[in-house]
Length: 133
Image (cartoon, rainbow, N blue to C red; front, side, top):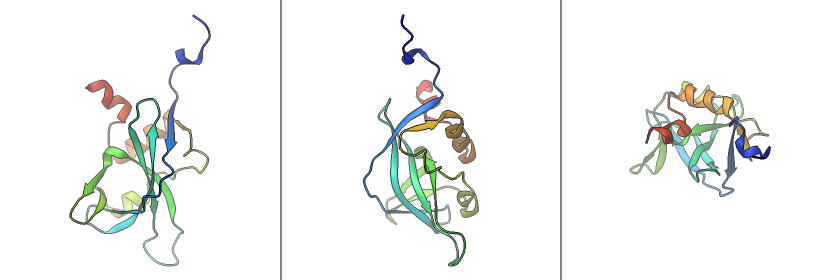
């Protein structure tokens, strides 16, 4: 067997942003707007949507500027009545989520960072869920 990279341990997740503008409202568990879905990140190995890229809006005008976070896709729930996505967490928890580093979104997401995000939102990482089925 050669020294090909396909035999190395997975330390990154290969992802690609869709590049499509979504601009879909995202609300917290109380139905209060917290931001909007800007994009999705697709795992190129599985074809699965891995994360929603959310721009979190500040609660008050003049507060911190908007920032982007990656939310595990299995944490975002469609709300067909209000035509939005819902995160079952309080606003403060969503606002405190790890920021999506600007240099990370396009291709490689370090597994360590991805695990931190899944742990923060209290969900099993999607790559572990696939092994359960």
